[in-house]
Structures are given as structure tokens and as C-alpha cells.
Amino acid sequence: QVDLVESGGGLVQPGGSLRLSCAASGDTFSRMGWFRQAPGKERQFVAAMIWTTGTTYYTDSVKGRFTISKDNAKNTVYLQMNNLKPEDTAVYYCAASSSYTWTSTSVRDVRTYNYWGQGTQVTVSS
Image (cartoon, rainbow, N blue to C red):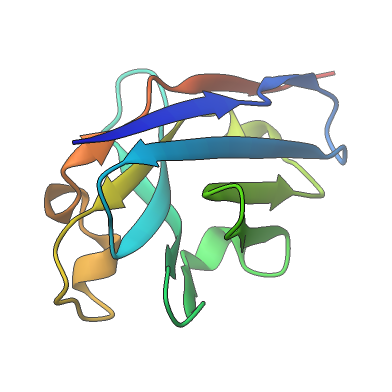
């Protein structure tokens, strides 16, 4: 069992920045990811990181604006979000996977993560 606790959401104006944090505890995991879900829409992939190698993956809409990073000592993953847009508004979830096999496709698939945080609201509005 991996417990994930998120923090850092809030209300920000377009063009602003936020940093989300997700602290993990419990069993080991191979990778962590960030997903988001807007009202009436499916949960979508945002970014992921392979824990051992630090390899990162992003969805195209956030490349150059969002950065996923980690602190090994704190077992925490971060999502730095810059130049936020109204379309980034959603509930953001961190996730962890205990599977030690992956591909560049599977890291983007919500079904391959078996642990989830509680979610944190990000609202981008003027």
C-alpha cells in the first residue's frame, strides 16, 4: 500500500504559477504521475516520472510550462506549473504505480496506476 498526500492547489490568475506537491509513504513504487480531471471530462494524463531514472513524460499541452520533479529524501514529487491558462483548471491527482514494467504509452494510461491521492483543485481565472 502506498499513501499519497497532495497539497498546493488554489486559485491563480492566467499567466500565474502554482506548485503541487505529493508526498508518498508505505510500499515502494516505480513511477509517479500527475493527472487532471475537469468537470464532465475523463481523467487525463499530465506528467510522469520514473522514480529510479528520473525520466520524465509530459502531455503536449503542458510541455514548456509544467515541470515534474522529485525529492528522493522526502519521497515527494512536485508539479511546477507556470504560465497557467484557464483550460488548466481541473482537479489534479497524483498517482503511483507498483508495476516495474512500462512503456512511453503505458506511463500515460490512468489504468496502469494503482495508488491515487485525494486530488487538489486548481482554478485559473481572472
